[in-house]
Image (cartoon, rainbow, N blue to C red; front, side, top):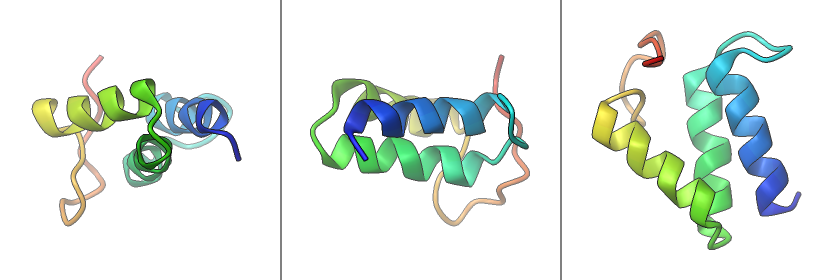
Length: 66
């Protein structure tokens, strides 16, 4: 999957677009995109850490900030 497609999947899971919200999955998609040197993926990973939305090892029940 291309990095842009990974970001789109992350966005879908972060905001529940046609899927149930799953912040762990969203983070993983963004992280995969970031690992492919995608700027948007890196930004989203940083936002997750900065805002405390989801970090590996945290309870995935944390809600996203809208």
